[in-house]
Image (cartoon, rainbow, N blue to C red):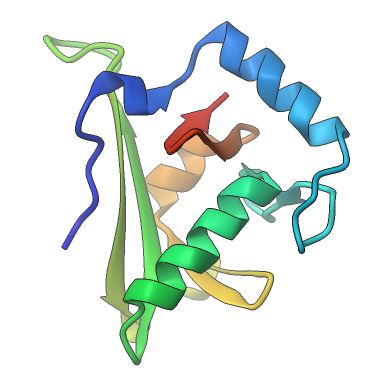
Length: 134
């Protein structure tokens, strides 16, 4: 079952969020993972809080033979211009090409080409129960 942002406040791409994430990226966190954010080979950057969030979700919801698939859509025109959605679903491993699979601290994650392009060079963070993109 897909996780979809229930309200616009759950997914923030504001300049203030960007400044916050840049600060977070340079600070040492109390996370069990390394203090440095993880940049995937496609350019997407996960903060430690987001990685911890993913690990927790995967521990609770993972299905054998499946990987966590992250999808992201940002509308650039039409009635939904400026709106963004993300989802975390479980998909069968054989469905993905090697270019779509990533290992983040031992966790297999799949990002579609569209999602990779949309999130390239952006920080993904998790704070106060919200996923932030900047």
